[in-house]
Amino acid sequence: MQALLKKYFGYDHFREGQEAIIEQVISGRDALIIMPTGGGKSICFQIPALKFEGVTIVISPLIALMKDQVEGLCENGIAATFLNSSLSSSEISRRLYEIRENRYKLVYVAPEALLAGYFSSLSSDVDIDLVAVDEAHCISQWGHDFRPSYRDIPAWIDTLKKRPVIAAFTATATREVREDILSILNLESPYVKITGVKRENLLYQVIKPVNKYQYLKEWLGKAPDENTGIVYGATRKTVESLSEKLEKDGFSVGAYHAGLSTEQRNKVQDDFMQDKLQIVVATNAFGMGIDKPDVRFVIHYNMPKNMEAYYQEAGRAGRDGLESDCLLMYDASDIVKQRLLIAQGTSDPKRYKMMLANLQSLVQYCHTGACLNAEIMRYFGEEVGMETCGNCGNCLDTTELVDYTVAAQKLISCVYRVGQRYGLNTVVDVLRGSKAQKVLDWKLDGVSTYGIMKEHSVSEIKELAMFCIAEGYLNITTDEFPILKLSARSQEVLKGRQSVMMKASKRYESTKREKSKAKRQKGYSGENRELYEALVQLRRELAEEKGVPLYIICANSVLEEIAMTLPRDRKSFLEIKGIGEKKFELYGERFLKLVNGV
Image 1 (cartoon, rainbow, N blue to C red):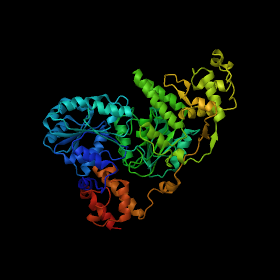
Image 2 (cartoon, rainbow, N blue to C red):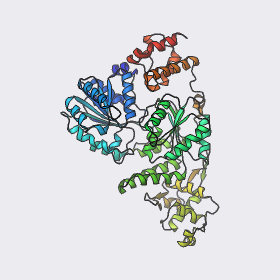
Image 3 (cartoon, helix red, strand yellow):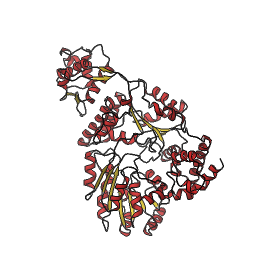
């Protein structure tokens, strides 16, 4: 396994957990692997594919994802191909013939194709040793990207002449989703491995700016020109408006959403992968098929639909292991927007309620004063061994805690006095002594808590309420009309046994890791800067010649190591992490010529 890793991928050592996973799969054991984005899931089925005699079928949800994975494998000297709707019938026929001739070790296929006539026929003709189900959370109706076609996988497996090893991989799976995967795929005595969801190189932050666009423009203006990133918006309208404003303000930006033509989307994606665009403003239609390792920032201009979506989308930053920023720009109006999108997207009452509950978990994440990494770990059912990571916006925030206990007591008391029958807006109206017609009609102006917080603004009371919900001092229902309720901890606050300490509203500043700020601002800071720039240009030329993304040629970290170590021959060049034998065969001489010319 070590020899294969070095020969084809150019690495001397496996990442944490990879070797044990590969050993189990090669031994013939089914597996369910939960590994964070950028954790190296693909190698866990690609190396077994090299060891098995027969072919490995990789079930993958997106055409772009298949194309990039196959291009990367071929560049590393591994025979791979894909079958999907982007191919002509003649091209599909050619590839089917080559697969029957045992020319490929890995074949990527969309789940929709599994029960198609041509694929069913192929499946009975070839020896399939391993089925790798990528993005396996798509099989569960409780997952955030449910794909009904994934439910065809077990039926297809039942048609095979022998049962292959089945290995399922995903970055996001709650306990319910994991149970669904295990049950629906009928995994037999599986090896289940859940590696840490915490990613040390990502700086998670929740920002509550008064003017979102102004804050975004200033933040992007401070980012190095070579840093690329994604800005997510909730709707097509937001994406188009935001990209137009940023372009007008001088940023290199492209828009991406499902309403654009295939040609428009492909151009934006290709330009981003080639570093011709600094920023892509996109809906959640952009991302799952994007394997760009050097995305330095992911900014959510609007709240996504749930924690799974946020974790996966934010996780597209820093896949190369270098420090990257994940900003979630929160505004209360985002909750209304997401509730509307959820209502439009599902007619199943049970799923609708589940989606509202998942959204509420993300709302609580936005308002908590606790460690953000710990909150993510708890959500995904991982044991939290620390209460502070020292590496997220909350942990790095030095804002002084303020005692809001008295204000919280007034708020909780009001929820009780109005009978736990109203939503946040009505409770705020009562506390501020509003003369709104609904307050008068419902005789809420007669409760004892009417007007007791008139000196506080609407936003102050709402922020306190959301903080109390996040910390468990209040509950909120996940019905169509969310209602504030008392919780088990409400009495502790009311009786003074629990203090409510909250940081003053952070509506302007973003936390920065000062130790790495200079590095991020300057980009590459090693020696031989001119050589590094020349290497970057050579990689761009090679990528354009081959028609592949830059990272398929090599990662930024490879260029940096070349510039620092100055390899002068084949032996020293192969010692560069990420350079395998096939990569050297394809590009080594051109890189060496450049280095030796220094």
